[in-house]
Length: 63
Image 1: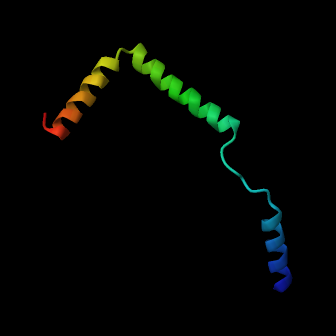
Image 2: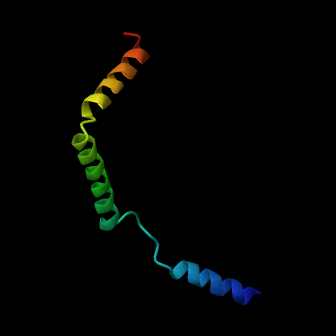
Image 3: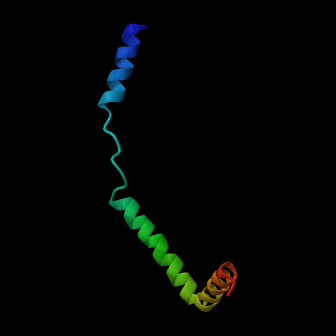
C-alpha cells in the first residue's frame, strides 16, 4: 500500500502544471469577441442595444 502511494505521489508531483491560458486560448477568445462585434454591427443591433442599456440605466437611477 505504501509503495502505491509513493508511485501516485511521484506521478502527481512530476506532472507539469498548467500555468494559465496560452496563446491559443487568448486568440480564440479574441476571435469570439470579434465575431460578436461584427454580428452586432452587421445586423444593425448597435442602436437597439444602446437604447436598451440607456433605458435600463435610467430606470435604475430613476431619471
